[in-house]
Amino acid sequence: MLNAQIKETQPDIIIILADDMGYSDIGCYGGEIQTPNLDKLAKQGVRFTSFYNCARCCPTRASLLTGKYAQEVGLSKNESGKLWVDCTDKELKSKHMEAHAAMIDHMDQGIGKIIEKLKATGRYENTVIFFLSDNGASNERGYRPGFDRPGQTRSGEEILYSFQKYDRPGTEKTWGYLGDGWAGAINSPYRYWKIQSYEGGICTLLIVHWPNGLKGKENTLNKGIGHVMDILPTCMDLANANYPDRINGEITDFPEGKSILLLIYQGVRSTNNTLFWEHEGGRAARLGDWKITALKDKDWELFNLAEDRTETNNLALKNPEKLNQLNKLWMAWEKRVTK
Image (tube, rainbow, N blue to C red; front, side):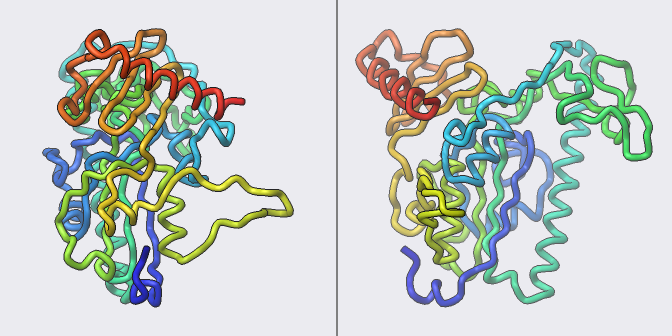
């Protein structure tokens, strides 16, 4: 779908995947944290408003790298061994949010240095930059060291976690968490957070910046529906590459994702008309504007996202036929990807 002129100058590609960042954390998505470099990329590029991840870091990364649902490549769970401990000290909670904001600021400054280097080397104009998050902001609390969390710094000093006492989070010797309140705030206007399949857990901001390839589309909002599994096919499209039929003699399964260049250049409404989610019991399915979603061990809720993007008006009782249709689709998908 790329025109001949763009194909002649295949771009460099940079993918920046933020960890546990809220949908409205950065300035160009309505946040109060100053992110001038990301804001500039957005002003000169395209912002997506209906792009999805897989609700958590591990499945999102698996999907991004393979172009498939995480369940299809054997990765759907992240056993964390968490111990739920809530922090009731409002001042300490605010300090954790301050530390989170500082990390966003630090990240933005780092992105600015990458941009400066691209310009200095003459590669800025023909580099595609994707910026997105692996899931919504995290409300998690009570984790102990272990799994993917260190117990010591590189110099051997102990790292204190939220179930222990410390006065000021933010240094390398503390490991803190936001909790429900702040996680909900920075996922605004959406409900819930990381792990859950409500919009607050799975809808990610996405900035696409490419001076050579997005002329005339600067500072635009794209409402097309996409998924992180579309990133690999998009990169292949940009590189004018084909997915191999075989790898090391083994027949390959082609990605389910589709190039988001369809959304940018052709105005296609969705890369996949039907999308599915499941992570640690949270689950969802989207068919056009209709979506069912549920927390672990809870009943489905039904929403019309065209009229209720924030998922506050449950239509399950008013439209059981639509709920049943989406449930059948989700059940068939689950059977297919977990066989």
